[in-house]
Structure formats: structure tokens, C-alpha cells
Image 1 (cartoon, rainbow, N blue to C red):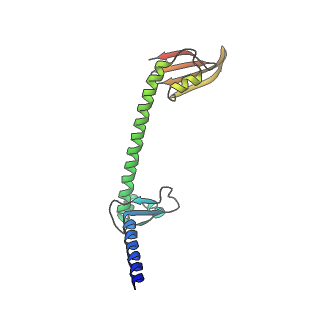
Image 2 (image 1 turned 30 degrees about the horizontal axis):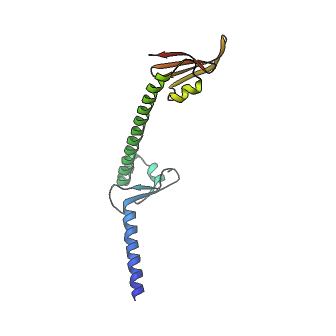
Image 3 (image 1 turned 180 degrees about the horizontal axis):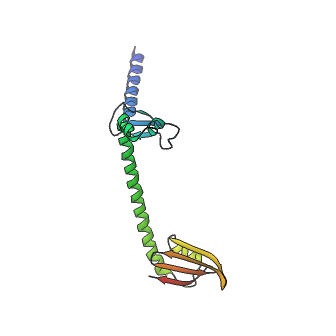
Length: 162
């Protein structure tokens, strides 16, 4: 009798935990969906737990909003969060590149090699060349905001700062 009570309690607790987990997530499946198979719901509910992405993706948005309102709202919220994360990462990268550009620009000197220039500067916005010139060796040009570096045969021959 005691063993049956322990088993019943364990099964009951397991069912409550499973119910809590199932109610908090959309489980997404379908052949056209390439993202994570689980997405948090905006609120607890047993409706819209299993989502066939093929069915949602093949209907007009107005029908999808009517048939799957919680999933569409969660999807749009996730898209906004992704956009915000991407924008924050882009801003941090731009600030880092700007700082590297200022520091590297101050260190640029004639007769530096191509490798030395690229090690102190961020990736150039534009790169032209290398081209074989009639007048001499291979010519290459790197453009950064406010700085243009000309190389001939892999060596800096001219630096223009705006």
C-alpha cells in the first residue's frame, strides 16, 4: 500500500511538472521551419502548444493571427528581440572599429607592409587592386573613413588623411 502511494505521488508530481512545461512553450514542427523547436509562450496556456509551421506559413497573415494569435504574438516579439540584439551588436562592433580606426590611423607610416597595415586597422570599407601597372609593380588601395592608403608591391607608398 505504501509503495502504491509513493508511485501515485511521483506520477502526480511528474504530471504537474510536465503540464507546467507544456503550458509555457510552443513546440514547433514542420518541414519548412529551421529555427529552434521550442519557443516560450507569452502566457501559460494549453492551447497552441503544438504548432505545425507548414500550416501557419501557408496561410495569409490575417488568418494566422486569427487561428494562432498567441503564437503569432510570440513570434513577432521574438523577431523584435532579435532585431534589438543585432542592432546592439552592430553598435558595439562599430564603436570598436571606430576606436581601432583612430588608433591605427595615427600609427600608419610610409614603408609599412600590407600585413602591418591590416594588423593595426579594422577591415577596410573598400579595397581596390592589386592591379599590375604599366609603370611598375602591383598597386593596391585601401579606403577607410577619412583615410586612404596606397600600396605598391605590398608596401605603403602614400597615405591620405581627410
